[in-house]
Length: 207
Image (tube, rainbow, N blue to C red; front, side, top):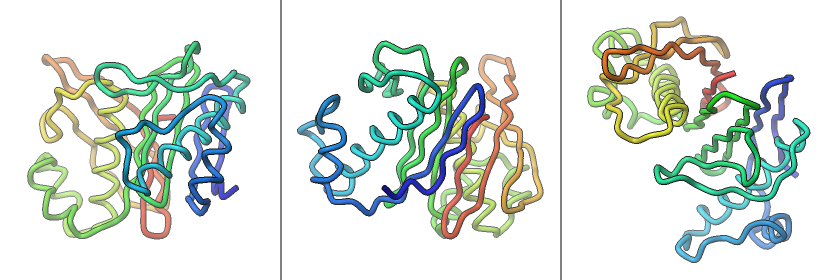
């Protein structure tokens, strides 16, 4: 089982999985509680679906919960069936990340470090963020992941990345804490975030 990372505290748990299994192997691990939807045709997406469920189950049981499957709300946000634990999933093949919190809304994002992020940055980043990130692809990736994590925490899809999701400038390290803000209807909500830089990708989530 290529579970590369699993960390937990009294309130949350998160994990990172590097997909190496076959679909048949993964299906055997979820067949008692989940079935891959018929509309998921792409091989990689099917693998991500399976791993997301296996990883979520592993984390929930780590915190003492009982896994009965996953459902989604009208905005596509995943929730555990018959559980108050909060869940967030992220896929960037071959990596899958998952985060669960006992009480507060969860948000995690995994993204591979690619030059395309610099091209789309002017559309999704505040001018102050653009200045801080410069041409640093890794830092751009952290900004992107942080904003995606904030979207998942907020739970709806009516946010503009450059205006409603703002990340405070930070000094890039291999890991560290940053602050995100969700700005809606003239109200700001500060969200502490944590990031890690791995070989070729970054992950950001709220602890």
